[in-house]
Length: 384
Ligand code: PHE
Image (tube, rainbow, N blue to C red; front, side, top):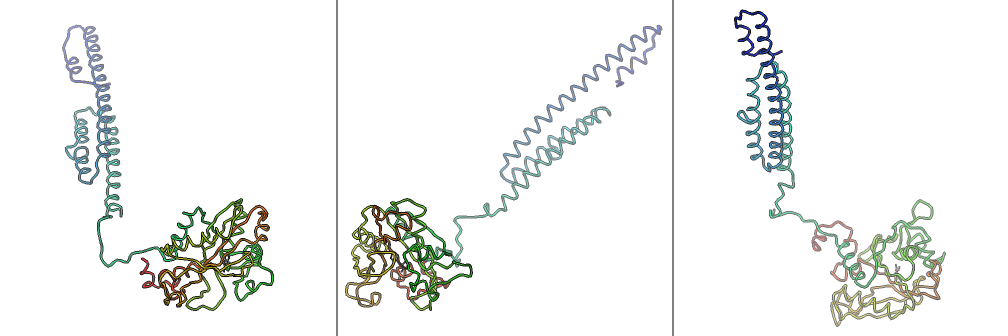
């Protein structure tokens, strides 16, 4: 029960009739208590709505603050000494003890919520202002910096791939660790062929595993995965167990082309070789010449030379012959088609292969194949 001042005044009234006094006294007390309860309830209600409004305002302003400075002004206007929270707190003083007990914790929790929201916003803004993103100036230029660049391998493979893509080929891939089947058997390479000899092939300790000696191993993978007709270009790394010198390496890259369709002809193979070489060397004058060649997986097999893109009458690149040996190629041997489930009476095809470093060496005048994987910075910088 609350005792307000008016109730005390009524109690102190001197009246002659005890009975009347009782009624008057109780009536006034009751009325005054009702008023006080009403006032208490209203204060509570007002306070609740005020808390809600201020809280919503404050949270939205915190959210809007994009800098630590604007955040600070939000803090001052809500949580500062003369801020809206402090204002609300000061109304506590005017309340009765009982009201204080009720409103005190409500207001404190309110203040805590706003303080927490402010601190987490401050954290976020501080992180943002020190994060590498915020400090990164795209216009800044630092002299004497080393720049990364694509390796010459990657650049050449991208050039070649885009030429073949432009001719309708798909880029294919195969494993560098192969089985005898994909590297030799499926390519019509007989059991006793010297290429299977351990002098040429890196045999691995796992049974029947080797490092592929050429990208022709991708042929069978592609024919297994795709029905005819198909046109693939497969660039990739190969390995041969041989002594290295300026033009031979134990690890090198090859590009393999395979085209299978109905009525594929030698003329189509030669046109493809010429077009791709002209594109690669950037010379429409480049011509090709064909010599017989032997590869067990093609019949007939040919070696294709390109006219020297650098001279008309002999230079050091073509060793004064005006021709440079560039590709091994031929029409796909019927045995290769058959073993890969393609009927050689319906389909025919051509295949060609070349050393990617060799083409790059000719194009850029690189004199030692071993430079490619040497990680030699001055060498690599020339292609940056
Ligand atoms: N694989 C052969 C080599 O490594 C090149 C080649 C590919 C020849 C396709 C003919 C057809 O020498």
